[in-house]
Image 1 (tube, helix red, strand yellow):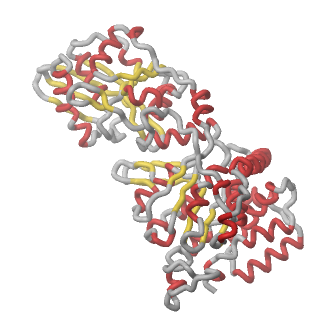
Image 2 (cartoon, helix red, strand yellow):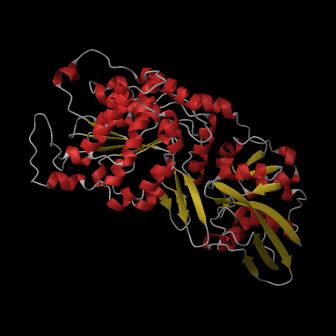
Image 3 (cartoon, one colour):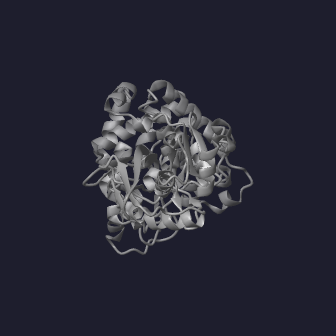
Length: 511
């Protein structure tokens, strides 16, 4: 008897429907074809024992399983459940005439329980797109998949439950998730607040500009000056995620298997802070089965790289292209996948190995030339892609002990949201979401400046030896500063403030 079951293969942050044909005939072999990997090839032993422990049996006949399209590699153990159901229906241990109307996915334990899988959300999206009646997934993934409207999602815990469902589909209620209600409930403010930071008004101003325009920022200063403390509070002043951004972010975390069991939607902007020992593959993504890296997990959020020069040179260099294109492409001989990587980079570093170069009170003990060598660990092209270079100075005792409470993240966030709304009215939000994403034509249209401002910018380009990319980024930052001032025109003072955030380029900092 020939049976057709439908599953799904995750590719990048999307999915492709897979037809699993199970044919049972005379003989005593098990043949699995359709470009399966080792995990899929091992499924026969897991399914055999799982069926036995659930009161079923493996048929004593020839079982041929074909997975099509045959040119797509089938990876992972989530095909256990659809193959098992095909075997049960093909051997007439289960009558399920409507089984081809559902997508079925799940890994089997030896006792017959169904284990969670990765990528339940893109699988559900594809099932709805292909017009399937419903989707059967592990119970732990049901809420995650149920945020997709238009397809019924059923959470299953054992093979027996799946069989009971096909005997009487009405006996199991589909999982229901009110996506908008959960999104609203999960949107809470960050527990870290800028009101807890004493002094550092110039740094807060720079971070406000970075948040308003989506600009990358690097903080340079001695140890204990508050670089990490300020960076961790940066996400608290970013605008809240839209529902569309939340769904896109959730897809990435679903594919990476980072969603917690009780959570079905990522409603807060991600904040990723990898250790400096991270590999280049872990940062940008990849592996034999391509998975999203830290820059993709930070999509629509913040990537914080603490102690930037301590990262391996190769790790930092692979970020250069994603910082420009906001997407990372991972190519293999047979296929390539794309992961979105639109994030705000916040980096911090000491000015030298001892940490006290340019310190107002303590003396640097580094040998001559060591400061320049330390700064050279961060390449010029990477530093050029960072819009704001900010020097963080130590906080004085008087500022630390003052009773005056600093401005809260809520107040700063309101100004950031207002500036982002201006940008939303200016741009097509399908392509450009903030000033930092402007291309050359958009830059020319919205960032014109008068002769006085152009003269200041020309002088800065010559004195600081800035690149053409730095020129564009100064104009983008100027546009953001003007938006925060609620000014339609970019004034000379806006350009002057933007220029001062380039003053820590390598040539001047070590000068």
